[in-house]
Amino acid sequence: MDAGLVGRVRRFNRTVTQRIGVLNDAYLARGRSLGQSRVLWEIGPEGIEVRSLRARLDLDSGYLSRLLRALETDGLVVVEADETDARVRRIRLTPAGAVERAELDVRSDELAASILRPLDDAQRDRLVVAMAEVERLFVASLVEVTATDPAHADARHCLRAYAAELDRRFPGGFDLGTAHPAHLSPPAGLLLVARLHGEPVGCGGLVFRGEGVAEIKRVWVAASMRGLGLGRRLVTELESTATEHGANLLRLDSNRALPEAARLYRSAGYQEVAPFNDDPYAQLWFAKTIA
Image 1 (cartoon, rainbow, N blue to C red):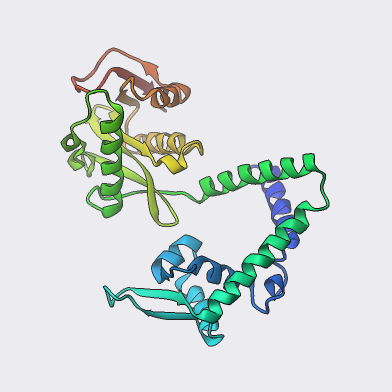
Image 2 (cartoon, rainbow, N blue to C red):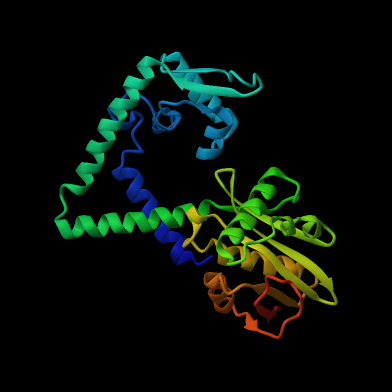
């Protein structure tokens, strides 16, 4: 990693943490840490499962337990078994917790206003636009991509969403039964699943054809994650994985109803080739030689 880039990120982190008050023990002058305040905010008026909160905030279970105990001691939250499944623990705000959360909301608005107030209109617009871009890139950096059993619930979610989208976008629809994952299981192939805060947001598969050839299949990205480069990342990781399995030629097919997919593959170095399969949904065929 470029040392200059790392240094600039660290400088940015120092500036932001100081400006928003992370260095203070009592965040927003409420007598509790930023961690406790953030947990209180994320619980929300509807409550939340402990495991969902842990995944959303990427917190160690032990640390989250300590934060919750502190909030319970202050009478702000209650942790109890879920009404429908006693194995699941849920957190809800007490009336005092709801009042405290509302006060945090007001003070957070005041902090945001204090950041914008010294700037002129043009500077405010520049800052807000830059913040939106930084937020999107931060989200992209939080995504984890791992090989996953196609039978796993996250994998099934992605494959169902992939098939449902093709069914909506293809003029003649898409046979949902053809998205079966059997050929994406080792040793015939594999499936990568992308997750954000523990939730599946994308996937991509490989099928090994032998003699150094592999095919990319079932590349899908959730609509909420598009524009963040996740599709390119999935393709890049599939290429690396294919190389590790001895492939030196990657192939894939697509449909003209998916122009953004064709643009992605072309920009990643794939060239159109003659048809290499008889897939009824294939209208474009691509190939790329990899090191």
